Length: 149
Image (cartoon, rainbow, N blue to C red; front, side, top):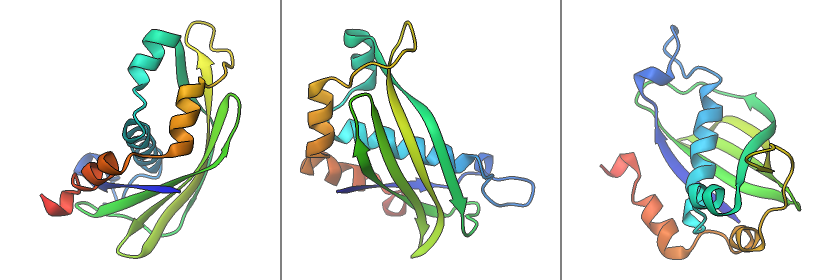
């Protein structure tokens, strides 16, 4: 199961050469993961407040294939590769008009907010991730496409 999220490239995302600064792809990937969780009905702030659990990035690996530039609308495609007891492995790709710009593998760990020690992903959250985005919410997120603005 995949989730797609559109992102427009702003001036602040680019470097002196006019292309997206490499580290900003991690920000784009983060936004897409956050929107996926939201579309699955998972409220990260509520999870932190009610359960004391937050998600943190534990590992990343990104390969860059082609540059994005100012005002490009890229599409971040995300999928879960593995759902563990206290971590989730995502594979994410950034695309523009059928051209792969960057791809990455990100491990997100579930940790106790106070101790920053691993904590089991609550069953309700794991179930939400397994079910995936609700159809209505996924449709609404596609409606946020900057191309349609």
